Image (cartoon, rainbow, N blue to C red):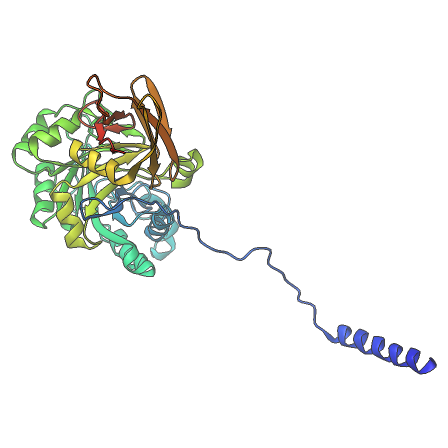
Length: 401
């Protein structure tokens, strides 16, 4: 017995000695940093993939709060596939702060003047714009390399003039922002066009009482300097401009025009950021540009989708599946409608409203028509918008069982 006690004591001493020799770490982490991308599931429509794009984004190199690298990361985390970097050419509010910060580089120790950093309502001096207006595009493209083919960056710029008379215009697929500016705003648009850029008329109702074209804009449209219109900007919707796009063959886009952080404006409110759905075969510059030029786009903002009626109907039918459930003794058929996407829908069937949440199923009961035949399911989608304030009608055929 004594021998057993002795062996146990030796073992305990050994364990204590080993514990004493083990080094206790001086630091500890409570969480391992990881990134969570918001995955936005959309259907394939008519053989096309749907890519999520924000074609109006700003950085610290004009008047926003984040670097181009942070903008790209934010866009990827928000579930986007495409982002256009569109810093202002004529307005770069942060430039004075940059120059104050770097005043030590000046032999005199004084901050350089931010010359021509605000030439919206006045012409630039003979020195022209001194900043490198291509820097934000270069940095965004470099940052996107981290995500491989998952993030396409479109180089762009915003031509920024007096909003009440001229307006703001995004040039997409630019090659040299430093050669766009001219004291004549028409010439600025022409300079962008010479580079092969597509030009979007931004937020046509911002800082104005009407979305109608101004006298200046009429001439720009007549000269074919405008290719598309931003019918959604942030939370704002300009339905009247949709008819213009249809009549004149212009593309429609929805964009954030983001300056601050996206999360407080969108995720905190339980919605995706404003974006454009682009119908294309692949996420390449050639395919995306072709899709936009051919007007294969829908616009999303705050749970609403707007665009040409056929695309809206095709998008919905690809998103929602309907199946026969049962038929009662009176011949009333009950269908199951299943939403296969991340987009919620509000359906108006007669006087009744159905809310079809993402990845959920609802049931709708349909009676017979006057001739005793099964009726198709016909309803409007209240959060889809075609021309003006009208909603598209959706017809799902009766299933004979």
